[in-house]
Length: 99
Image (cartoon, rainbow, N blue to C red; front, side):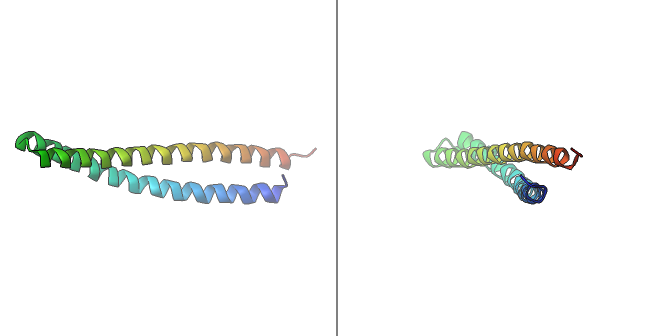
């Protein structure tokens, strides 16, 4: 892979990492909101003991769990791209050394 190709890939990886980190920040805020909503729904279900409240609780918990899974996927993708970035940097350094 040529030096310019490695630099181009590094730039693309850095941009994608920035996007994913922004997405991670947003998902953290959304998860906090959904987890609070699930906690409130759980309390309402305990107090009211109605089928409707229990259904609302389950739905709120599903939404919070879906956001947890999404966040974990974003974190895994960030880790994968960070490893790729390290590989590309190593390659760039190796190609910059005099032979």
